[in-house]
Image (cartoon, rainbow, N blue to C red; front, side):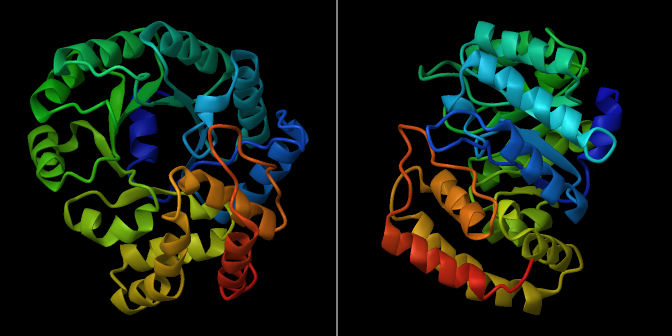
Length: 303
């Protein structure tokens, strides 16, 4: 799949980030991961991001990373394209990027670099070096310490033909509008705020109709129903699902930092696809929180 072919794939449909399965001891569980991917693939996501933020990329060792990406690519071959999360320092990100390319990933999601603040020019240099280390398509994730402005993103797009996507995790509407207007159809644009469904209608109005869904991991049918309601501007259905599910879901998710991942793992367990515990520094939901989530999921019916 060429970068431009990947760009076309990512320009429509629902995207998602599969959880990474760990066993009770916290080790990577490839059998559980295969079962998860085989369950989710038929629901119709356009692409899946292996070892993304929801997949706890930040907690994986290098050898585990290779196992996660290889398992995802092998399991989903011929059904749904796999993009691999990459990040860390520039040299680490390049190593991950080249490994993902070697293993057959169709593209990369470049997560924010590690820890240190950097100038706009420094962030741009980081992105450019990763893009030029591979031939597959790259989507840059503007979030946290990675905050590219429209001018530098335009320069990167000129210098890096395989930079094909921009994923927004900042929620800065002024910045999103300036990037969308300045770069036009050069990139594909993805909504990437936590629990992106809450922002989906607003982002669609900005010309960003595609987003990644974390709840697809445990209520895939509801996630797809919501996406289709957004696409056809069925405001009644969108409002009902937000009121009935997403707002009370956010009440649980917002109780602690890191729960954006923890709550998804809890949801997967409730759905019968236990991905094991989260790794430190994240913490799992408390029992009472878990029970609230279980009651909320039950109201969504069979998936």
